[in-house]
Length: 169
Image 1 (cartoon, rainbow, N blue to C red):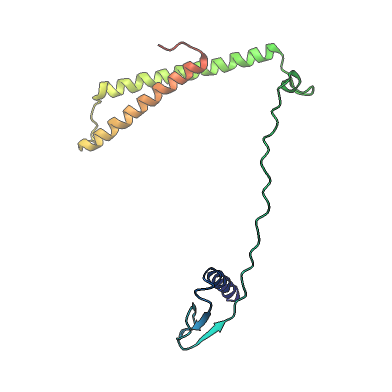
Image 2: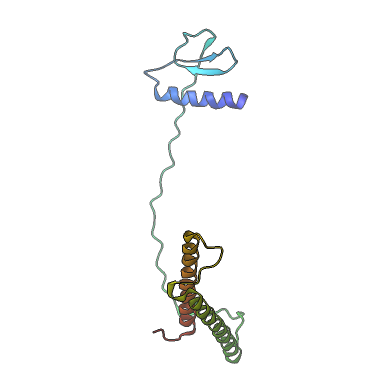
């Protein structure tokens, strides 16, 4: 309760400071249910005038002009690896690259199989209707999902070919 009163007093002090010449008095009024209200007039029963101190103004610190950092040129020493940085011999790196290409090739093969199956099921935009699709809207929803799957699979294939460095059509 004291924290609320302090916060309200601070708010009232700030409000009074802004209107110091027009409204120089603040009253705290206690209602019948025990709530406190701050008013600029004390005409209501149970109001007491509150003496507020002036608001102290603290000036902002002096601003320091921004200095643009000096541009440093990159030398051969800064671009080379540290002496204790682990190095991999070219044979090991070549083996890793070959493994990576094999993984990508396997992934490409599986995506192409998936695309062929999706195209067969899609049947040029007229897939077979299932028994649970008596409602045409359900059929259209399944058709939209199939089209999204086709597009996503085609994009995956393009990305894999780009990654492998294979020329696209």
